[in-house]
Length: 388
Image 1 (cartoon, rainbow, N blue to C red):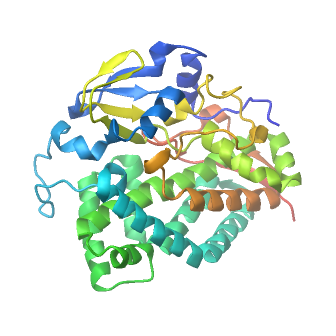
Image 2: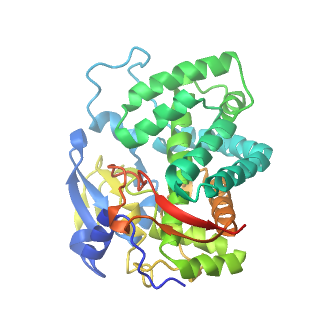
């Protein structure tokens, strides 16, 4: 197993180590959140688990957003006075109906294209390994994410670029949604062999803006998370020759490796939001209804009260523990199965195709995108020695 000396994102390391084993002051942090006023960042695994499990008290942020967030000064002409949210921002019957439909079409589409996706992964990784020295983000993570967005969602290169810009460069969501609405209208008029067309056929009551919002959700929270998960895994392994050899010798460790990467090097930083539907108590704070909550996913995943040796990267830890990278309960990520499948396949092909690999720079020199929502590398320069 690893000796634990795996460096990840400096800001995450600083936040988790600074909190210490039992520091309540750092567990629940009041923070001003734009026009939403003062909300809470929840960095405690137990409290976060409780919040994500109690949908009656802690609802989706979108349901209360209209009364908390300021309206855009100049709404886009394609938007009406009613705000439209994706399934993760709704509760009640609307949430159940859309989630069931998405579950059915995702499962069916993944079954249809899983072989092609696996072949795409193998081709991307094997092509990258021939380079000898490469940027694993550009040569492995991005091509795999693009393949999934194309084969599952049917998105073209321009939309993929706009979505990636929205993740890492603050592209305004309403502009992105307006672009997606135009694309959805075209898909409705001329259905294609993709998940979005399947969704409109499965649930024709969804209007174009609702379909666009859910397409954005699937692409941003699913596909880009997958790319970051794969490259974060390579980053951890590049610093740990013992684990490289261990997993090459025993592929049965791969699922546990992927599970531990999700915990230790979570691609999600603060990407899960809730709002209080009624007054409650969180930590030492009495919280009124309408308060925005942000789950500090990556910090919760290193909570020393929840995980033995929480700051140690240990791929032999197994899977008998619950990280919060994909949420939990009714609002857990719909793309968990395909994300795990593709990430495991990418790391399997990468490890089997190499005898060793490592970083070409010091871990402290690596740059992450400047966003509090995700832990995504700008680039990951590595060297590889190929098996053949």
